[in-house]
Image (cartoon, rainbow, N blue to C red; front, side, top):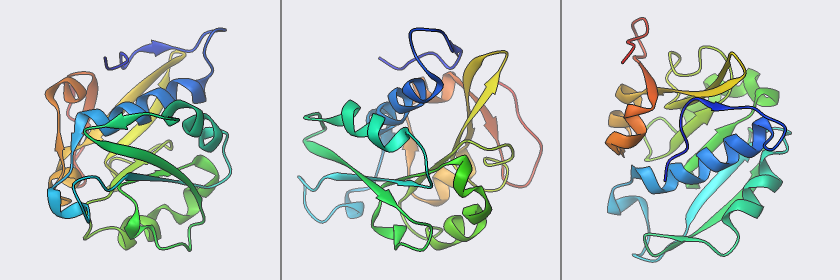
Length: 172
């Protein structure tokens, strides 16, 4: 089940626990082309760029889990690493100054890009976490996802605010 885009930050779950849950669910609600994987059982590789508690939380969330016959592996990465090997890249707020170069690096790949800074989706990132009224919300740039050959499940789209790289927000 996809967590609501209006999941409230509360004393039971931290902001990053909610984000980690969403991030893992992206592996279930995004479809990669078969060519994105070397074999039918190749793992889904998720890379986390920048200092954040997200890496450890994601490692706990995905431990032992398999999505569509694929294990999910989490890697702590630097902005200078070859991120084209990743199926998902989370660019933390701590790595915000590297966003443009990371997006350019993975531009012609099947890499889902996820961020947490204002303007990420409008800048060409695919999914952005934002906080509004103490709620975690999702912003999606479908143009960027389509360009990367990724398909988003309608359930993911339904709980998100849609953006385009070259226009203002489209609210659904």
